[in-house]
View 1 (cartoon, helix red, strand yellow):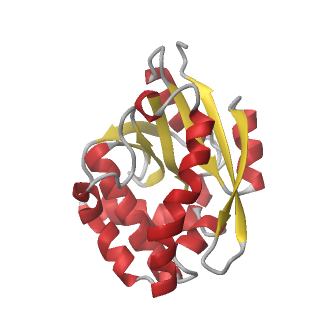
View 2 (view 1 turned 90 degrees about the vertical axis):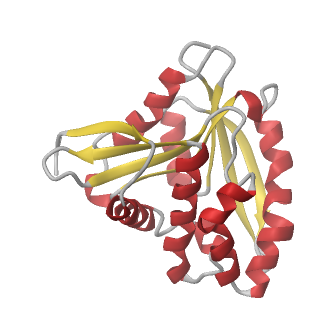
Length: 219
């Protein structure tokens, strides 16, 4: 599909069918993600519940941007952004929208990794990446994906630009990725590469998490 018409919108709620469609877009878009594989303990049946919990939490506390194909109404892509001062799963209100259920579905080893390793391993590095800014002045991109059949149409770029235009003079955009392909994409979008952090897995291995930041459009 070439140059298909689509529109970009920010949504405060999704119908159940739209939520299901958004989840499947993420499942298809992140099929080769090392991080998602680790987060689910390699259980592909839990990929959907993971993204469902992320999307629902973002609808509550963040900003959900979606790309809609005008001719069919299909969700072609989406981005989950958290504005300054907000982070994913920072309180019970967010966690009760699917994350706690997802956690209980994991193997004991993967659940223990989530509780004792994941956050503590990345938090210090991300704090360094954001410096001299903080979470209080950063737009953080937790998830962005485009359905494979709609890729290479500029959707991901425009989903980022929508927030870049909103960033105030004291704000930056920040994100992390786990694939070399995405590293190249974000460098092409003029994000500053801030380095990589080795994230321990439940199997005592490591995956590399690459972090980026970029000033808002008016900084």
